[in-house]
Length: 134
Image (cartoon, rainbow, N blue to C red; front, side, top):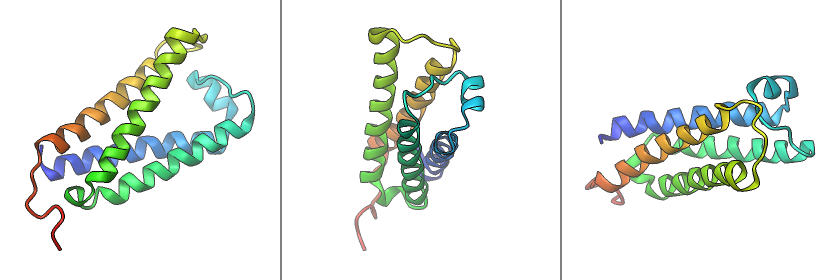
């Protein structure tokens, strides 16, 4: 995968996380309910998650300028997406939460998987000669 391609994957990843983070940060409960997102027990959980998603999106967007020098940030992004996807799957299949929308959470996991695959593929195949040189 070329550096330009992974740059666009990272930017799409950042935009997706920024959108989700802003939705949660402003706690637009009517919009969240319409999308089928489960309601938080208290508003603070949605606010904290929104803040974390906004921070992750800004970090990934900044790293997308030079992916060859941002290998650690790509690894952090991959770990974050894997944890989010596993958490969603755990809640669906182990805890057995009710899904107000049968497609939303599985679609969110699918999007996480696509970002992980794109970023991981770049990490595994790219061998930039200038990755850590000055």
